[in-house]
Length: 352
Ligand SMILES: Cc1cc2nc3c(=O)[nH]c(=O)nc-3n(C[C@H](O)[C@H](O)[C@H](O)COP(=O)(O)OP(=O)(O)OC[C@H]3O[C@@H](n4cnc5c(N)ncnc54)[C@H](O)[C@@H]3O)c2cc1C
Image (cartoon, rainbow, N blue to C red; front, side, top):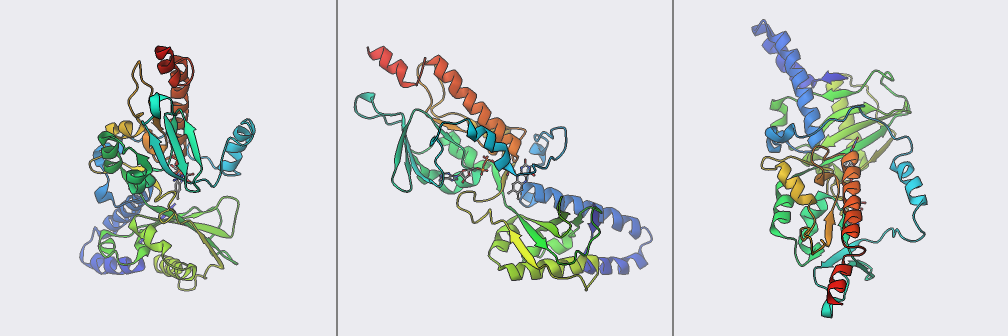
């Protein structure tokens, strides 16, 4: 991994170097630090001024490093889906409203009803909500009736949700030496003080495993959202300008193809992943994942919550999302044992 400063910045420093003798080393150290800071910014998806330094350590790095899933997650899910009964997963069925906590006349109705945007309704004993924290921030007030309790709303407000996108650039003739590693763009604090251009959100440029023609640039923070509003041509143009500026090579070619994610404007994601904001705590992550109403001996919860943001220590990751799903599946198993079947059973037994 290389740390590259922009040539503009280098020019300024060369001038300073003539004045100060130790500037060379300071310059190199600063360049490494800027590169690392920008990489952390990319990992959080927001300005570091909004990220909690105290809570940063609550993230647990799991051993084994990054693993590339060759077929993507479709390949991971396929064997699980094969074991499910036919037609029990409904695709392309956005949920409009979850009605909960209001059983029908005589308490005989379902604990919850999930209404989809196409009008179809599904009665349910439990509703496991796994929409992203971004979706909850944007839509929780109209997604649930009655509204979510105060602790849940506070957790949704206080936890941070970052923005990030990947921009894949394909080149006819690659200009980099394959397997030499990616680059971290070491924007200086001075350069980042002017944020009118979305390219300041560019953090790293990585090679793609398995392709010698494609590189992937990461854009993070509010700039990730601004990038989505540009055309492919504008993005190709801007990234090329930055790569030329940072490498000092004005002959670097334009990509022949651009493919990019648009997680921020996608209403089913509304961003990338959660982070610990200045006033976030692990307690907020626990509150976000807590069942509603809370579990007691006599009453079962109706709404359960999973997803990466509900997983202390592993938030912002796929393994966090997976662990939280297993946690809630296990909760349903335990509740089913506790109530000897669906949660209604207890009330029904009492009545009889
Ligand atoms: C650019 C980028 C790179 C990443 N890289 C990594 C990485 O290298 N390693 C890693 O571990 N993690 C990575 N992540 C994070 C990882 O992708 C997420 O943490 C993970 O996908 C979260 O899973 P989730 O199930 O909690 O939420 P999501 O993946 O957001 O799933 C929520 C689901 O809810 C659905 N939904 C939303 N609204 C509705 C509605 N109204 N009705 C019905 N369905 C709805 C959505 O369509 C979606 O399918 C990355 C994320 C991004 C954006």
